[in-house]
Image (cartoon, helix red, strand yellow):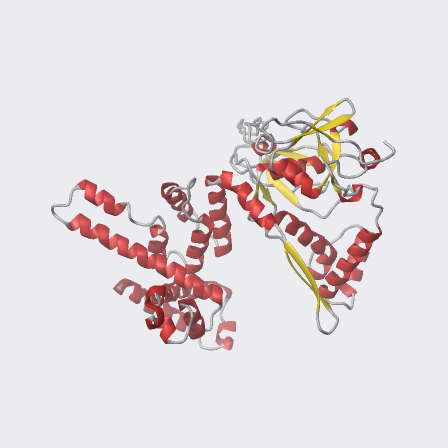
Length: 506
Protein backbone atom coordinates (compact mmCIF):
# COMPACT_ATOMS: atom_id res chain seq x y z
CA UNK A 1 0.00 0.00 0.00
CA UNK A 2 2.83 2.39 0.92
CA UNK A 3 4.67 1.62 -2.33
CA UNK A 4 1.51 2.29 -4.36
CA UNK A 5 0.98 5.63 -2.60
CA UNK A 6 4.63 6.57 -3.24
CA UNK A 7 4.22 5.65 -6.90
CA UNK A 8 1.15 7.86 -7.13
CA UNK A 9 2.98 10.85 -5.60
CA UNK A 10 5.98 10.39 -7.87
CA UNK A 11 3.76 10.10 -10.95
CA UNK A 12 1.80 13.21 -9.94
CA UNK A 13 5.05 15.18 -9.47
CA UNK A 14 6.29 14.05 -12.88
CA UNK A 15 3.04 15.13 -14.55
CA UNK A 16 3.11 18.50 -12.74
CA UNK A 17 6.53 19.22 -14.27
CA UNK A 18 4.98 19.13 -17.75
CA UNK A 19 3.28 22.50 -17.17
CA UNK A 20 0.02 24.01 -16.04
CA UNK A 21 -1.68 25.23 -19.23
CA UNK A 22 -2.33 24.33 -22.85
CA UNK A 23 0.38 26.77 -23.85
CA UNK A 24 2.92 24.96 -21.66
CA UNK A 25 2.00 21.62 -23.19
CA UNK A 26 2.02 23.02 -26.74
CA UNK A 27 5.60 24.19 -26.24
CA UNK A 28 6.86 20.71 -25.35
CA UNK A 29 9.06 18.89 -27.91
CA UNK A 30 7.68 15.70 -29.47
CA UNK A 31 9.80 13.40 -27.31
CA UNK A 32 8.55 15.09 -24.14
CA UNK A 33 4.94 14.92 -25.37
CA UNK A 34 5.20 11.17 -25.86
CA UNK A 35 6.94 10.67 -22.52
CA UNK A 36 4.38 12.91 -20.82
CA UNK A 37 1.51 10.91 -22.28
CA UNK A 38 2.97 7.76 -20.72
CA UNK A 39 3.29 9.51 -17.33
CA UNK A 40 -0.33 10.62 -17.48
CA UNK A 41 -1.44 7.08 -18.39
CA UNK A 42 0.54 5.71 -15.44
CA UNK A 43 -1.05 8.08 -12.93
CA UNK A 44 -4.51 7.38 -14.36
CA UNK A 45 -3.97 3.66 -13.79
CA UNK A 46 -2.97 4.35 -10.19
CA UNK A 47 -5.89 6.69 -9.52
CA UNK A 48 -8.31 4.23 -11.13
CA UNK A 49 -7.03 1.55 -8.76
CA UNK A 50 -8.00 3.77 -5.83
CA UNK A 51 -11.36 4.47 -7.51
CA UNK A 52 -12.01 0.74 -7.87
CA UNK A 53 -11.19 0.12 -4.21
CA UNK A 54 -13.60 2.89 -3.23
CA UNK A 55 -16.30 1.55 -5.56
CA UNK A 56 -15.96 -1.91 -3.98
CA UNK A 57 -16.33 -0.36 -0.53
CA UNK A 58 -19.46 1.55 -1.58
CA UNK A 59 -20.91 -1.61 -3.16
CA UNK A 60 -20.19 -3.65 -0.02
CA UNK A 61 -21.90 -1.07 2.17
CA UNK A 62 -24.87 -0.92 -0.25
CA UNK A 63 -25.63 -4.64 -0.38
CA UNK A 64 -29.31 -5.40 -1.18
CA UNK A 65 -29.82 -7.24 2.12
CA UNK A 66 -29.06 -4.00 3.99
CA UNK A 67 -32.20 -2.44 2.55
CA UNK A 68 -32.71 1.22 3.32
CA UNK A 69 -29.78 1.20 5.76
CA UNK A 70 -27.34 0.61 2.88
CA UNK A 71 -25.00 3.46 1.99
CA UNK A 72 -26.45 4.13 -1.48
CA UNK A 73 -30.03 3.96 -0.19
CA UNK A 74 -29.22 6.37 2.64
CA UNK A 75 -28.05 8.89 0.04
CA UNK A 76 -31.21 8.43 -2.03
CA UNK A 77 -29.80 6.15 -4.78
CA UNK A 78 -31.14 2.83 -6.02
CA UNK A 79 -27.69 1.30 -6.54
CA UNK A 80 -24.02 1.86 -5.70
CA UNK A 81 -23.38 2.50 -9.41
CA UNK A 82 -25.88 5.38 -9.37
CA UNK A 83 -24.19 6.91 -6.33
CA UNK A 84 -20.75 6.62 -7.95
CA UNK A 85 -21.98 8.04 -11.25
CA UNK A 86 -23.47 11.08 -9.53
CA UNK A 87 -20.43 11.76 -7.35
CA UNK A 88 -17.90 11.34 -10.18
CA UNK A 89 -19.89 12.70 -13.12
CA UNK A 90 -19.03 9.54 -15.06
CA UNK A 91 -21.22 7.35 -17.27
CA UNK A 92 -23.24 4.36 -16.07
CA UNK A 93 -20.79 2.09 -17.87
CA UNK A 94 -17.78 3.58 -16.08
CA UNK A 95 -19.49 3.32 -12.70
CA UNK A 96 -20.42 -0.32 -13.35
CA UNK A 97 -16.85 -1.04 -14.44
CA UNK A 98 -15.41 0.40 -11.21
CA UNK A 99 -17.81 -1.62 -9.07
CA UNK A 100 -17.18 -4.84 -11.00
CA UNK A 101 -13.38 -4.57 -11.04
CA UNK A 102 -13.26 -3.25 -7.47
CA UNK A 103 -15.38 -6.15 -6.21
CA UNK A 104 -13.17 -8.58 -8.09
CA UNK A 105 -10.10 -7.03 -6.42
CA UNK A 106 -11.70 -7.18 -2.98
CA UNK A 107 -12.65 -10.86 -3.41
CA UNK A 108 -9.17 -11.77 -4.62
CA UNK A 109 -7.52 -9.87 -1.77
CA UNK A 110 -9.72 -11.60 0.81
CA UNK A 111 -8.95 -15.02 -0.70
CA UNK A 112 -5.21 -14.30 -0.71
CA UNK A 113 -5.35 -13.36 2.97
CA UNK A 114 -7.02 -16.69 3.77
CA UNK A 115 -4.28 -18.54 1.90
CA UNK A 116 -1.59 -16.62 3.75
CA UNK A 117 -3.27 -17.40 7.06
CA UNK A 118 -3.48 -21.12 6.18
CA UNK A 119 0.17 -21.23 5.16
CA UNK A 120 1.27 -19.49 8.35
CA UNK A 121 -0.67 -21.89 10.60
CA UNK A 122 1.87 -24.34 12.05
CA UNK A 123 -0.48 -27.33 12.33
CA UNK A 124 -2.25 -26.88 8.96
CA UNK A 125 -1.84 -29.92 6.71
CA UNK A 126 -1.47 -29.88 2.92
CA UNK A 127 -5.09 -30.88 2.33
CA UNK A 128 -6.41 -27.91 4.32
CA UNK A 129 -4.10 -25.49 2.51
CA UNK A 130 -5.15 -26.94 -0.86
CA UNK A 131 -8.82 -26.52 0.06
CA UNK A 132 -8.27 -22.85 0.87
CA UNK A 133 -6.22 -22.28 -2.29
CA UNK A 134 -9.02 -23.84 -4.38
CA UNK A 135 -11.34 -21.04 -3.22
CA UNK A 136 -9.15 -18.33 -4.75
CA UNK A 137 -11.17 -16.87 -7.70
CA UNK A 138 -9.77 -17.60 -11.13
CA UNK A 139 -9.88 -13.83 -11.81
CA UNK A 140 -7.41 -13.19 -8.96
CA UNK A 141 -4.44 -12.59 -11.33
CA UNK A 142 -6.44 -9.79 -12.99
CA UNK A 143 -7.00 -8.12 -9.63
CA UNK A 144 -3.33 -8.49 -8.66
CA UNK A 145 -2.21 -6.92 -11.95
CA UNK A 146 -4.49 -3.91 -11.37
CA UNK A 147 -3.21 -3.51 -7.82
CA UNK A 148 0.39 -3.69 -9.08
CA UNK A 149 -0.34 -0.97 -11.62
CA UNK A 150 0.54 -3.14 -14.63
CA UNK A 151 -3.06 -3.42 -15.85
CA UNK A 152 -5.64 -0.66 -16.21
CA UNK A 153 -9.15 -0.95 -14.86
CA UNK A 154 -10.45 -0.72 -18.44
CA UNK A 155 -8.28 -3.62 -19.57
CA UNK A 156 -9.24 -5.63 -16.48
CA UNK A 157 -12.93 -5.26 -17.29
CA UNK A 158 -12.22 -6.19 -20.93
CA UNK A 159 -10.56 -9.42 -19.81
CA UNK A 160 -13.35 -10.25 -17.37
CA UNK A 161 -16.09 -9.58 -19.91
CA UNK A 162 -14.21 -11.25 -22.76
CA UNK A 163 -13.39 -14.50 -20.96
CA UNK A 164 -16.88 -14.70 -19.46
CA UNK A 165 -18.05 -16.91 -16.63
CA UNK A 166 -17.65 -20.53 -15.60
CA UNK A 167 -20.17 -22.95 -17.09
CA UNK A 168 -20.50 -26.66 -17.77
CA UNK A 169 -18.04 -26.67 -20.67
CA UNK A 170 -15.60 -23.98 -19.52
CA UNK A 171 -14.18 -24.71 -16.08
CA UNK A 172 -12.28 -22.40 -13.75
CA UNK A 173 -9.10 -24.31 -14.55
CA UNK A 174 -9.50 -23.69 -18.28
CA UNK A 175 -10.20 -20.00 -17.71
CA UNK A 176 -7.16 -19.72 -15.42
CA UNK A 177 -4.89 -21.17 -18.10
CA UNK A 178 -6.34 -18.83 -20.73
CA UNK A 179 -5.96 -15.88 -18.37
CA UNK A 180 -2.30 -16.66 -17.75
CA UNK A 181 -1.61 -16.64 -21.48
CA UNK A 182 -3.63 -13.47 -21.99
CA UNK A 183 -1.91 -11.48 -19.23
CA UNK A 184 1.44 -12.30 -20.81
CA UNK A 185 0.53 -10.47 -24.02
CA UNK A 186 -1.79 -7.58 -23.07
CA UNK A 187 0.83 -5.07 -21.98
CA UNK A 188 1.03 -3.59 -25.49
CA UNK A 189 -2.73 -3.75 -26.22
CA UNK A 190 -5.48 -1.23 -25.58
CA UNK A 191 -8.73 -2.17 -23.82
CA UNK A 192 -10.62 -2.83 -27.08
CA UNK A 193 -7.87 -5.10 -28.38
CA UNK A 194 -7.73 -6.89 -25.03
CA UNK A 195 -11.47 -7.60 -25.20
CA UNK A 196 -11.19 -9.02 -28.72
CA UNK A 197 -8.27 -11.24 -27.69
CA UNK A 198 -10.08 -12.42 -24.56
CA UNK A 199 -13.25 -13.13 -26.56
CA UNK A 200 -11.28 -15.19 -29.10
CA UNK A 201 -9.81 -17.24 -26.25
CA UNK A 202 -13.28 -17.84 -24.84
CA UNK A 203 -14.56 -18.91 -28.24
CA UNK A 204 -11.73 -21.42 -28.58
CA UNK A 205 -12.58 -22.79 -25.13
CA UNK A 206 -16.32 -22.89 -25.81
CA UNK A 207 -16.60 -23.56 -29.51
CA UNK A 208 -19.76 -25.60 -28.96
CA UNK A 209 -21.47 -22.52 -27.54
CA UNK A 210 -20.83 -20.34 -30.59
CA UNK A 211 -23.93 -21.58 -32.41
CA UNK A 212 -26.12 -20.95 -29.34
CA UNK A 213 -24.79 -17.40 -28.91
CA UNK A 214 -25.20 -16.80 -32.64
CA UNK A 215 -28.83 -17.96 -32.47
CA UNK A 216 -29.49 -15.68 -29.49
CA UNK A 217 -28.09 -12.70 -31.40
CA UNK A 218 -30.32 -13.56 -34.35
CA UNK A 219 -33.38 -14.01 -32.11
CA UNK A 220 -32.74 -10.58 -30.53
CA UNK A 221 -33.02 -8.76 -33.86
CA UNK A 222 -35.74 -6.16 -34.40
CA UNK A 223 -36.65 -3.13 -36.47
CA UNK A 224 -39.19 -0.65 -35.17
CA UNK A 225 -40.72 1.97 -37.44
CA UNK A 226 -43.12 4.48 -35.95
CA UNK A 227 -44.57 7.90 -36.69
CA UNK A 228 -43.83 10.85 -34.40
CA UNK A 229 -46.31 13.51 -33.42
CA UNK A 230 -44.91 15.95 -36.00
CA UNK A 231 -45.39 13.45 -38.83
CA UNK A 232 -41.75 12.36 -39.12
CA UNK A 233 -40.97 8.65 -39.05
CA UNK A 234 -38.30 7.19 -36.78
CA UNK A 235 -36.46 3.87 -37.16
CA UNK A 236 -34.80 1.92 -34.37
CA UNK A 237 -33.26 -1.49 -34.87
CA UNK A 238 -30.90 -4.19 -33.75
CA UNK A 239 -29.28 -6.72 -36.09
CA UNK A 240 -27.28 -9.89 -35.58
CA UNK A 241 -23.55 -9.52 -36.43
CA UNK A 242 -23.82 -11.14 -39.86
CA UNK A 243 -26.73 -8.97 -41.04
CA UNK A 244 -25.45 -5.95 -39.14
CA UNK A 245 -22.09 -6.04 -40.89
CA UNK A 246 -23.89 -6.20 -44.23
CA UNK A 247 -25.90 -3.09 -43.27
CA UNK A 248 -22.74 -1.30 -42.14
CA UNK A 249 -20.91 -2.27 -45.31
CA UNK A 250 -23.77 -1.02 -47.47
CA UNK A 251 -23.75 2.42 -45.88
CA UNK A 252 -19.95 2.50 -45.75
CA UNK A 253 -19.86 2.01 -49.52
CA UNK A 254 -22.41 4.80 -49.98
CA UNK A 255 -20.88 7.39 -47.64
CA UNK A 256 -17.21 6.30 -47.76
CA UNK A 257 -15.90 9.36 -49.67
CA UNK A 258 -17.44 11.66 -47.03
CA UNK A 259 -15.59 9.87 -44.26
CA UNK A 260 -12.11 9.69 -45.75
CA UNK A 261 -12.74 6.41 -47.52
CA UNK A 262 -10.86 4.81 -50.38
CA UNK A 263 -9.30 7.07 -53.04
CA UNK A 264 -10.44 5.87 -56.46
CA UNK A 265 -8.00 5.56 -59.33
CA UNK A 266 -10.73 4.89 -61.88
CA UNK A 267 -11.77 8.23 -63.39
CA UNK A 268 -15.49 7.48 -63.25
CA UNK A 269 -15.37 6.34 -59.60
CA UNK A 270 -13.15 9.30 -58.70
CA UNK A 271 -15.71 11.68 -60.23
CA UNK A 272 -18.46 10.00 -58.21
CA UNK A 273 -16.39 10.38 -55.02
CA UNK A 274 -15.76 14.07 -55.75
CA UNK A 275 -19.47 14.62 -56.35
CA UNK A 276 -20.25 12.88 -53.05
CA UNK A 277 -17.75 15.06 -51.17
CA UNK A 278 -19.25 18.22 -52.67
CA UNK A 279 -22.82 17.15 -51.92
CA UNK A 280 -24.48 19.83 -49.72
CA UNK A 281 -26.29 17.17 -47.67
CA UNK A 282 -24.82 15.91 -44.41
CA UNK A 283 -23.45 12.37 -44.26
CA UNK A 284 -26.45 11.35 -42.16
CA UNK A 285 -28.85 12.85 -44.70
CA UNK A 286 -27.13 10.98 -47.53
CA UNK A 287 -27.48 7.74 -45.55
CA UNK A 288 -31.19 8.41 -44.91
CA UNK A 289 -31.87 9.23 -48.57
CA UNK A 290 -29.94 6.14 -49.67
CA UNK A 291 -32.05 3.88 -47.45
CA UNK A 292 -35.25 5.22 -48.99
CA UNK A 293 -33.79 4.78 -52.48
CA UNK A 294 -32.74 1.20 -51.73
CA UNK A 295 -36.27 0.42 -50.52
CA UNK A 296 -37.74 1.94 -53.69
CA UNK A 297 -35.41 -0.14 -55.86
CA UNK A 298 -36.28 -3.30 -53.93
CA UNK A 299 -40.00 -2.53 -54.15
CA UNK A 300 -39.82 -2.12 -57.91
CA UNK A 301 -37.60 -5.19 -58.47
CA UNK A 302 -38.78 -8.16 -60.48
CA UNK A 303 -39.89 -10.74 -57.86
CA UNK A 304 -39.16 -13.53 -60.32
CA UNK A 305 -35.46 -12.77 -60.56
CA UNK A 306 -32.75 -14.14 -58.25
CA UNK A 307 -30.24 -11.40 -57.52
CA UNK A 308 -26.55 -12.18 -57.28
CA UNK A 309 -23.17 -10.85 -58.33
CA UNK A 310 -21.27 -8.11 -56.54
CA UNK A 311 -22.50 -7.09 -53.11
CA UNK A 312 -21.14 -4.78 -50.40
CA UNK A 313 -17.95 -6.22 -48.96
CA UNK A 314 -18.54 -8.48 -45.96
CA UNK A 315 -15.85 -11.14 -45.66
CA UNK A 316 -15.86 -14.16 -43.40
CA UNK A 317 -12.47 -15.66 -42.57
CA UNK A 318 -12.20 -19.38 -41.83
CA UNK A 319 -9.49 -22.00 -41.76
CA UNK A 320 -9.48 -24.91 -44.17
CA UNK A 321 -10.50 -27.12 -41.24
CA UNK A 322 -13.71 -25.13 -40.79
CA UNK A 323 -14.27 -24.98 -44.53
CA UNK A 324 -14.30 -28.78 -44.59
CA UNK A 325 -16.82 -29.03 -41.79
CA UNK A 326 -14.39 -29.34 -38.87
CA UNK A 327 -12.37 -32.13 -40.44
CA UNK A 328 -8.61 -31.97 -40.73
CA UNK A 329 -7.69 -30.12 -43.88
CA UNK A 330 -4.69 -30.24 -46.15
CA UNK A 331 -1.51 -28.47 -45.19
CA UNK A 332 -0.48 -25.32 -46.94
CA UNK A 333 2.05 -25.17 -49.71
CA UNK A 334 5.70 -25.31 -48.77
CA UNK A 335 7.23 -21.92 -48.00
CA UNK A 336 10.80 -20.75 -48.47
CA UNK A 337 11.90 -22.40 -45.23
CA UNK A 338 10.49 -25.75 -46.28
CA UNK A 339 7.73 -25.56 -43.66
CA UNK A 340 4.02 -26.04 -44.08
CA UNK A 341 1.08 -24.36 -42.41
CA UNK A 342 -2.70 -24.23 -42.37
CA UNK A 343 -4.59 -22.99 -45.37
CA UNK A 344 -7.17 -20.40 -44.34
CA UNK A 345 -9.85 -19.50 -46.84
CA UNK A 346 -11.97 -16.37 -46.86
CA UNK A 347 -15.65 -16.99 -47.53
CA UNK A 348 -16.89 -13.74 -49.02
CA UNK A 349 -20.26 -12.22 -49.74
CA UNK A 350 -18.63 -10.51 -52.67
CA UNK A 351 -16.29 -11.56 -55.41
CA UNK A 352 -12.91 -9.95 -55.56
CA UNK A 353 -9.52 -9.92 -53.88
CA UNK A 354 -9.04 -10.64 -50.19
CA UNK A 355 -6.47 -8.94 -48.02
CA UNK A 356 -3.96 -10.87 -45.89
CA UNK A 357 -5.51 -12.73 -42.99
CA UNK A 358 -3.96 -14.55 -40.06
CA UNK A 359 -4.64 -18.26 -39.60
CA UNK A 360 -6.81 -19.06 -36.57
CA UNK A 361 -4.75 -22.05 -35.38
CA UNK A 362 -7.13 -24.75 -36.47
CA UNK A 363 -10.29 -23.25 -35.03
CA UNK A 364 -13.41 -24.84 -36.53
CA UNK A 365 -15.34 -21.59 -36.62
CA UNK A 366 -15.18 -18.41 -38.66
CA UNK A 367 -14.76 -14.70 -38.09
CA UNK A 368 -16.61 -11.84 -39.74
CA UNK A 369 -13.87 -9.47 -40.84
CA UNK A 370 -13.84 -6.45 -38.52
CA UNK A 371 -16.29 -7.97 -36.01
CA UNK A 372 -15.13 -9.68 -32.78
CA UNK A 373 -18.08 -12.10 -32.71
CA UNK A 374 -17.35 -15.54 -34.25
CA UNK A 375 -19.74 -17.43 -36.49
CA UNK A 376 -20.58 -21.10 -36.24
CA UNK A 377 -19.79 -23.97 -38.58
CA UNK A 378 -23.44 -23.96 -39.69
CA UNK A 379 -23.23 -20.33 -40.79
CA UNK A 380 -20.01 -21.02 -42.69
CA UNK A 381 -21.73 -23.88 -44.53
CA UNK A 382 -24.71 -21.66 -45.37
CA UNK A 383 -22.58 -18.80 -46.67
CA UNK A 384 -20.68 -21.19 -48.89
CA UNK A 385 -23.94 -22.04 -50.64
CA UNK A 386 -24.58 -18.54 -51.95
CA UNK A 387 -21.13 -16.93 -52.13
CA UNK A 388 -17.67 -17.63 -53.47
CA UNK A 389 -14.48 -18.61 -51.70
CA UNK A 390 -10.87 -17.69 -52.22
CA UNK A 391 -8.14 -19.90 -50.83
CA UNK A 392 -5.10 -18.22 -49.27
CA UNK A 393 -2.13 -20.41 -48.38
CA UNK A 394 0.21 -19.50 -45.50
CA UNK A 395 3.58 -20.82 -44.42
CA UNK A 396 4.38 -21.62 -40.79
CA UNK A 397 5.38 -17.98 -40.15
CA UNK A 398 2.01 -16.65 -41.31
CA UNK A 399 3.29 -15.31 -44.63
CA UNK A 400 1.04 -15.60 -47.69
CA UNK A 401 2.56 -17.92 -50.27
CA UNK A 402 -0.36 -18.42 -52.64
CA UNK A 403 -3.73 -16.81 -53.37
CA UNK A 404 -6.17 -19.05 -55.18
CA UNK A 405 -8.96 -18.15 -57.54
CA UNK A 406 -12.63 -17.50 -56.84
CA UNK A 407 -14.60 -20.74 -56.81
CA UNK A 408 -18.09 -22.12 -56.95
CA UNK A 409 -20.38 -19.15 -57.58
CA UNK A 410 -23.64 -19.70 -59.41
CA UNK A 411 -23.69 -17.45 -62.47
CA UNK A 412 -26.40 -14.89 -63.17
CA UNK A 413 -27.78 -17.08 -65.96
CA UNK A 414 -27.87 -20.11 -63.65
CA UNK A 415 -29.75 -18.10 -61.01
CA UNK A 416 -32.26 -16.97 -63.63
CA UNK A 417 -32.81 -20.58 -64.71
CA UNK A 418 -33.24 -21.69 -61.08
CA UNK A 419 -35.82 -18.91 -60.59
CA UNK A 420 -37.85 -20.24 -63.50
CA UNK A 421 -37.46 -23.88 -62.42
CA UNK A 422 -38.14 -23.49 -58.64
CA UNK A 423 -40.51 -20.51 -58.71
CA UNK A 424 -39.25 -19.25 -55.35
CA UNK A 425 -38.18 -20.81 -52.06
CA UNK A 426 -38.48 -24.57 -52.48
CA UNK A 427 -39.18 -25.19 -48.77
CA UNK A 428 -42.52 -26.78 -47.97
CA UNK A 429 -45.38 -24.23 -47.84
CA UNK A 430 -43.04 -21.24 -48.30
CA UNK A 431 -44.34 -18.53 -50.64
CA UNK A 432 -41.23 -16.35 -50.90
CA UNK A 433 -40.54 -15.31 -54.53
CA UNK A 434 -37.16 -15.88 -56.23
CA UNK A 435 -36.03 -12.33 -55.45
CA UNK A 436 -36.12 -13.21 -51.74
CA UNK A 437 -34.04 -16.38 -52.07
CA UNK A 438 -30.45 -17.59 -51.90
CA UNK A 439 -28.84 -20.42 -53.84
CA UNK A 440 -28.25 -23.58 -51.80
CA UNK A 441 -25.90 -26.36 -52.94
CA UNK A 442 -27.54 -29.76 -52.61
CA UNK A 443 -24.12 -31.43 -52.58
CA UNK A 444 -21.77 -29.29 -50.52
CA UNK A 445 -19.19 -28.01 -52.94
CA UNK A 446 -16.00 -28.76 -51.03
CA UNK A 447 -17.05 -31.42 -48.52
CA UNK A 448 -19.04 -33.66 -50.90
CA UNK A 449 -17.33 -32.78 -54.19
CA UNK A 450 -20.44 -30.92 -55.25
CA UNK A 451 -20.60 -29.06 -58.54
CA UNK A 452 -21.86 -25.63 -59.46
CA UNK A 453 -24.45 -27.19 -61.75
CA UNK A 454 -28.11 -26.27 -62.00
CA UNK A 455 -29.17 -29.73 -60.86
CA UNK A 456 -27.15 -29.34 -57.64
CA UNK A 457 -28.65 -25.98 -56.67
CA UNK A 458 -32.05 -25.03 -55.24
CA UNK A 459 -33.52 -21.75 -54.06
CA UNK A 460 -34.23 -21.18 -50.36
CA UNK A 461 -35.29 -17.98 -48.62
CA UNK A 462 -32.95 -16.64 -45.94
CA UNK A 463 -34.97 -17.90 -42.91
CA UNK A 464 -35.32 -21.41 -44.33
CA UNK A 465 -31.67 -21.45 -45.42
CA UNK A 466 -30.80 -20.63 -41.82
CA UNK A 467 -33.12 -23.33 -40.52
CA UNK A 468 -31.67 -25.97 -42.85
CA UNK A 469 -28.07 -25.43 -41.76
CA UNK A 470 -28.63 -24.60 -38.10
CA UNK A 471 -30.90 -27.59 -37.44
CA UNK A 472 -29.11 -29.89 -39.92
CA UNK A 473 -31.87 -30.60 -42.39
CA UNK A 474 -30.68 -31.92 -45.77
CA UNK A 475 -31.90 -31.75 -49.35
CA UNK A 476 -31.20 -34.56 -51.79
CA UNK A 477 -32.03 -35.22 -55.42
CA UNK A 478 -33.15 -38.27 -57.38
CA UNK A 479 -33.27 -37.35 -61.04
CA UNK A 480 -35.30 -34.16 -61.25
CA UNK A 481 -37.08 -34.63 -57.90
CA UNK A 482 -35.77 -32.87 -54.78
CA UNK A 483 -36.37 -34.24 -51.27
CA UNK A 484 -36.19 -32.62 -47.86
CA UNK A 485 -34.94 -34.81 -45.01
CA UNK A 486 -35.56 -33.64 -41.41
CA UNK A 487 -33.03 -34.24 -38.63
CA UNK A 488 -33.57 -37.08 -36.17
CA UNK A 489 -34.60 -34.59 -33.49
CA UNK A 490 -37.56 -33.47 -35.64
CA UNK A 491 -38.50 -36.83 -37.14
CA UNK A 492 -36.84 -40.02 -35.80
CA UNK A 493 -37.81 -41.78 -39.03
CA UNK A 494 -36.35 -38.95 -41.15
CA UNK A 495 -39.17 -39.33 -43.64
CA UNK A 496 -38.37 -37.67 -46.96
CA UNK A 497 -40.62 -34.78 -47.98
CA UNK A 498 -41.07 -34.00 -51.66
CA UNK A 499 -40.13 -30.48 -52.78
CA UNK A 500 -42.03 -29.78 -56.02
CA UNK A 501 -41.53 -26.61 -58.03
CA UNK A 502 -43.63 -23.59 -57.06
CA UNK A 503 -44.14 -22.82 -60.75
CA UNK A 504 -47.65 -23.92 -61.73
CA UNK A 505 -46.51 -24.45 -65.31
CA UNK A 506 -43.97 -27.06 -64.15
